[in-house]
Length: 321
Image 1 (tube, rainbow, N blue to C red):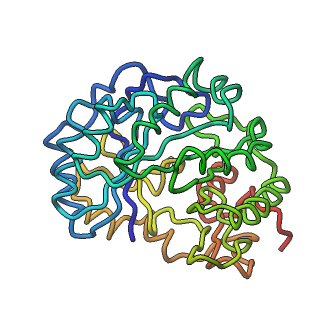
Image 2 (image 1 turned 180 degrees about the vertical axis):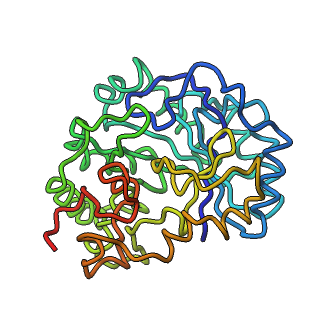
């Protein structure tokens, strides 16, 4: 299934340390308006993608439920990515009524100490309260971006997710875009160790487990419970639309494939040279020589950031090929 993530707004009530969007206290004046957003949804409907309403904080966009309802009516599976602090009981009821099928909430640690250092005092408890308001109304997952500061929290994170009633945990490995810093990234060797730790832990918990921005997990993950994770989806089964309508292979990959304000999404998805390259061209360097090049593919965003070549080797991989 294709996953389409749309950055609905730059506006956010928090200012998080690792924010990919470099979100702000007010919306971007050039964001897609309601009519543009609805036309965009119409254009992607034939593909029947999973549609993620991201941000910023999407709950701050006044027309967000109108947009969600329209997407659901067209048969799209719609989810929302939130920081959780605005998930009041009323907001939870509106989300459920709109047909949104899942909410993802980001935590930066298994306790208030680390999370609040990144997102602001009191934000951890407010996010937990938001999850409590969702329980029994709509399923939710917890997203955890792994950095040097919080890597030790992985075991506790599984336990916390189960206790809170989450359906899933999604682990992200930091890509230094937006406000993310290179010095907060995990080393390739440590990433390998943590991926193996996640794979061991996941068998102990009744949770859906996914790993993002570490495609090497495709060669590490053990089969079981119908789950398979890993591999870079950018431009293949994942695409990101900015708040201004620009199309990117993923939210961490700053090479534009086109703009839905200039061309129909289907035309961009089918004919963009960048997206065609990611699907068809062979990789170079050690990623091209690697026997896992098809199942893993390396992180194309990190390859571009390191070498300027989005088909080049992934610097986050520790394999010597």
